[in-house]
Length: 74
Image (tube, rainbow, N blue to C red):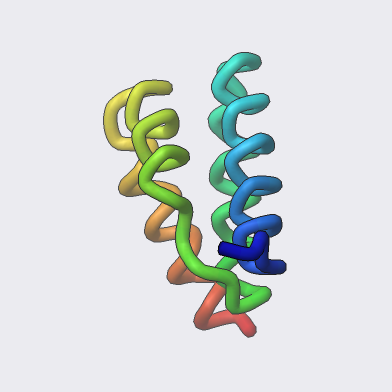
């Protein structure tokens, strides 16, 4: 199976989320979710969603809302 541009982009997003997880930077996750929605990207991978959920309760819901806000702003 060939490594696609979509897989590469998802890997980049996962690395960003992992970095934010390490730094416990919840605001960066919210901002990233908004940019993803605004740019029309797919929502976070399951791996990234697990990391976000582990950061603190409710962050995944806030990221989802931010993603939807980004979609409506585009």
